[in-house]
Image (tube, rainbow, N blue to C red; front, side, top):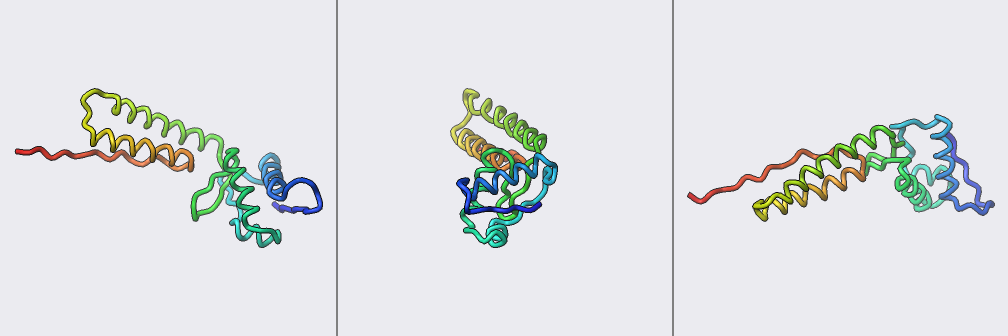
Length: 142
C-alpha cells in the first residue's frame, strides 16, 4: 500500500494519512494483524515530521483501527480479536470486583485486587491478554 500526502490541500497531513490507512483497510489491502511502518520510517519516507505520523497513528488507535504494541509497532486491529480480549478482561474485572465487594476481605487483598483491576484495564486498552491472577499468601502468627 502506498501513502501519499499533499501539503497543498486544506486537509491536515495526519488526517490524509489516517484516511488512506482506513481506505486501505476498506479495500482489503490491509488486514487484521498487518504491521504498519514505524513512525520514523513512514515520516522519513513521506518527508514529514514524525510527530505528524505519530498523531495519525494515535487517532487511528483511538478510533480502533490499529493496535499499538509498544516497541513492537503498530498493527491493524482485528475486530473479533479485540472484542474477545476485551470480553475476557471484562469478565476477569467482574470477578475481581465481586471479590472486592465481599464482606470481610482483608485490606491487603483489596489493594492487590484493585491493582489487578487497573492492570486489566490497561491491558484491554492495549489489546493484550489479561495477566494471570496472583494470589496473596498470608502468614499467620503461631
